[in-house]
Image (cartoon, rainbow, N blue to C red; front, side):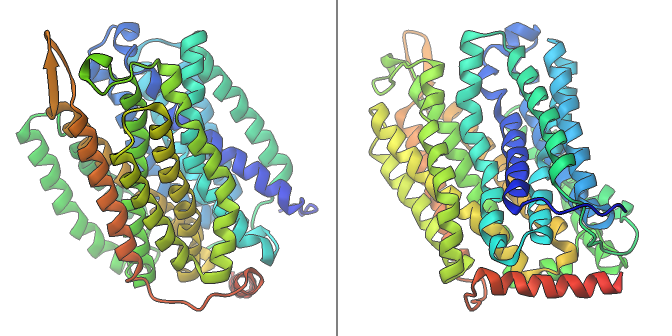
Length: 481
């Protein structure tokens, strides 16, 4: 392998964070377009919903797989593969209005979510000790930052330009990302040994497909179909776990994952993902509800998207603050504070749904809590897993956030569809439907705070000491390679 001078740490962080934000944006840019896509594609709304479902599925399946592949074959190499997947998906969506082509394109885009855990792992391997914790805080937050900025940006494109434009922009920025990675980001010498666990990958993928399809299609598919999917998922997971515990190089090290520090962090990530997504899903739709409902503001799609921008700004500003708190008090403390802040945001939302300013304030508080939580999660994982499993472990943590978002999407859609009001033949969600969503999301955030109490207490250490341990662990792994 050719050795080249290491780039400046800030350049490495900037390149990887740009990748994370862009990939996160690519996951959400289709959301403002959903109401128009049935007419554009000449397809029923139930089929158009696959543009969201397929991205969720491929993201969930490929994130742990590519994370493990990065640990084994090189994180930078697999990162480039993930970025290439996003570019292929963007190209397909940019050149066609055919629903089948769009679904395939969105599938490729979904697989690129693995960029974030891969980026976190590269930062752990390559950055100086004092920069590790602050940098991974920023990288982890790109998942939320991209979503917060992606929807407003997409609404502006949909309103004032051809909708294909947003995919062309995504494609161009993706190519720029690849160039930046090739020029700036080094390939880590840290690898884990063994063979890729193909059986484990197939088993986990089959479980995720069955489970997430059942969750995401709860309101669209028949009960017998859903029962079959859930039954298959229930049968697969113990068989998969049995195999993973007995193979020499498992896709997911269940013994490590069962450690309280990892287990409760991952469960907390699921609940944080749920609470975060409820905020994004409800805000844009609430602002657009018609005035005849008695509470609706009747604002445009552009205004609804812009309501999410302050939350995005808050996430950018608070990511480094979260890292400082984690350095001083430990990431466990930080995650607890973040969960409480998200719950407080939903309390605010219960009483501020009658005007745009109040909605923005409540949504921004929730986003602020999300930024702090997303920054703390990878730090907790890194404290608890070997350096050779960083990408796989963070991939699993990202997967748990995705599962939380999938469950949230189904619950929000079910509540808004069933708690309604009608007038002159018109039907819309009642205000109480949104309040129910806020209560459920707030309870999820409180539950996440409760799980934090179950995470073992670890003595807070300065960033230099934490990363020094990482460096020592890394040296040992390289020596054994």
